Length: 261
DNA sequence: ATGGCGCGTCAAACGCGA
Image (cartoon, rainbow, N blue to C red; front, top):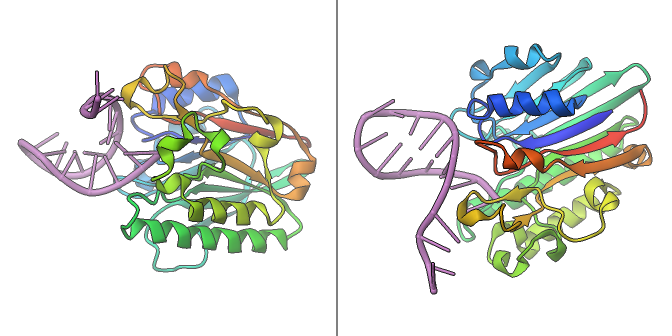
């Protein structure tokens, strides 16, 4: 089964683009971030027409996540555990049930954290603590899982075309990177890095300054696999081609193929 | 050199993102 994550930067602005991509790539599951829509405004019919079940956790104006699957959903949970006062829609999780395999898929939009010195940076770090705790909880369950999404983390220097340009940014702060390392150190596998050890592997290019044309990118969208999911990994990749389409998102789809069905 | 974008909200700029 193929699981894809994609920050689409507005589901209504990106509807035709998203539908065209799904027709071409046809993933079993796709996780969207930054839908920038309330649940009632999500164009679910258009996706249902392509055969997808749709679950959303929206918010007015910004943030918002959604998970779509060609297979049935079992449990659907909205919101990352650990802080009932958190009002931002950044996490949705579901069990996807195939005939011979069940996978828990977490779709996350990790806080950006900029600017440093504002309350946004500690919010990011606290959110990452909650994600790590949730990862521990999921590891205690027998069902394999994939944590997919826009992590807003540049893990290593190799993950940026110009790493020195990001040293003052929340995406590349030592505290941010350490929190990400702690998450991975639970025993998870970074699917893209495991399959593509070389430089030049990016998932985001800024709209400004011809960043895509210059390949001035960063890798911030990740798929972290539980040990049993990693055992079943057959391939992972980044689909750059929608970044060259009209009205693109600034992120591109990132996918992993898991054996079994 | 160092500015360059885009979306949503809401009706003119502004918050937000990375």
